[in-house]
Length: 226
Image 1: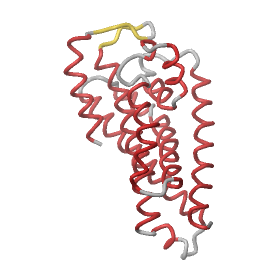
Image 2: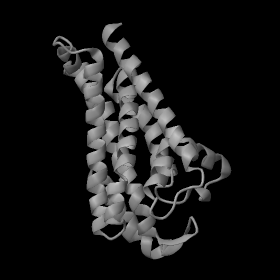
Image 3: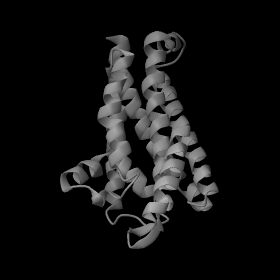
């Protein structure tokens, strides 16, 4: 949870004086103001995904928590929902704590964090489901590094957290736009403004979320029962 706060301080204090202010969505913003919402999104990403990936894998493969719960009068869906919602809860908590730090530095309006809560919940549910997909398909804990390097790090670096995606080459920009963190970051910057294609971004997030939940349910079901 401390990593996004460290990035906020390091990049905000280190690069902020060098960059100063720039125009984003036809508004002039300082670099720390641009960076703050991105770090809130990163906190949600890290907390929900890694709880769903590493912690759920441990509960599934080493501690056998899932199997033990299934001996009680609980269905597989009950256990799945409990793990998924716990991963999402940790993501929301991480986003809120980071958001409070961003507010304390004067980089985000206090009311904006409250109105951004539905965005945090949607992001946490999506990334928590992605973590459960990982827990369901990998066979060793070391293999969790593969989706981390192939999926999480590209989002962390390319999705507009540290710089506008318009600075990227066209092909890289298309890739970044397709990654879900881009839409989350854009929505969290709503006090500055929204992209004119935001309805498409919202629809894309809902589609990805539904696909991730379905895939995670089936992957873990097969792991336990087949």
